[in-house]
Image 1 (cartoon, rainbow, N blue to C red):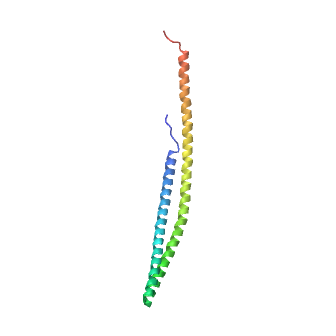
Image 2 (cartoon, rainbow, N blue to C red):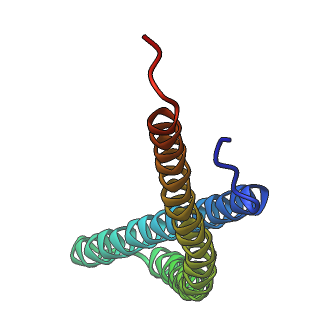
Image 3 (tube, helix red, strand yellow):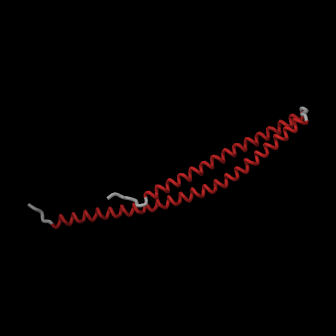
Length: 148
């Protein structure tokens, strides 16, 4: 008789759920990394524009040039604020996804433990049956007189 875990289909389901939650968490982490990269690019662009604006002031920039630079700076600041807010929202989502993944993992680990315990009990019982069969065979051989 081979070992059969009665909750095997539930264990497979738990593994599938855990993997799905892990994939969702990784997707959020990647999205956060992209948003941080975009934020860094905007901040580098803002620093470069500020440096260029000071250089153009020294070269005698016109009022329209300064006005355009101010409009661009305001737009870049709005984009930076949007990206920062997006990152914060994504971090909240990441925390939620991490909790969901840990919960799914915990549920899968519980079933893994139950399976291990049932398998250990099965092995002990199989060893007992094997020993009982060997004992019965020994007693049978001892009780039957040898033929000469």
